[in-house]
Length: 328
Image 1 (tube, rainbow, N blue to C red):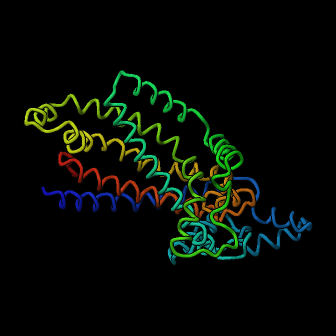
Image 2: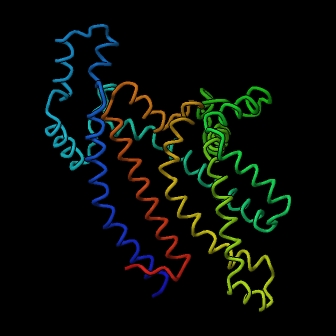
Image 3: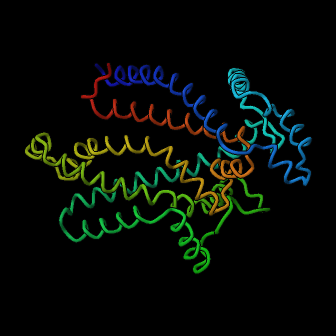
């Protein structure tokens, strides 16, 4: 079967598997959040200073929180069937509009962090495999273990202390210069400047994982017969590494990268809070604090869809990278 045929067959299989997965995620998320104590009416009434029984009952009736859980679930599924994520009691806006405002920031942050993690991790893995057992390998292994062990919020705080407070090179928070009104290339460079620290904080943990994984995969690939055959044909070590060894070593890395997309979004909650980055992670944290479960359900649904799409892309990439992968 050609590579195009393998990719098409993989896409059909993963798309069919995604449908029941999404339905299960929607129902489980809804039921689990309904087990949490409190609701938006408690928070709104408490903030207004009128947390009486009558006020709470009126707020719950207004937002449909006084209905049985089954009725609320049916109403939520009906909203999803009409491509609506519901209404936010906290912001008094449709949930879709609120998420649409925050989504670009989180997607840009996650993709930047993932690219940094994969590129830097694979590059370090190549160096470690090339110098296996020697001092570069051991030194980089120590740094990999260090970044793997340090909590993400502590890394973020230390980067702020070093690059923002001490050196003054990079901003400590936000997503762009307030009031600057920069557009075009100047605006892009301004946003990239604000993204460096949060993306690096989010990526360092995964750099350590991908470096160790790429090292192990490359060392295993170097012992295979096709590498010895390529060497016997007179190919240079660089050509063997890039054309044969690296292509097979990328398989486990791409698999984990897709699985880690959900972890990146979870880490974004901490990173976006530390750096005041306007994204879905910070929005989810605010929704938990205000018991705005409509927004939280929307964020969870969107993050689940992102993970499913990422896994589909990983399956397609693997079907293209490795002709031995057969899809049944």
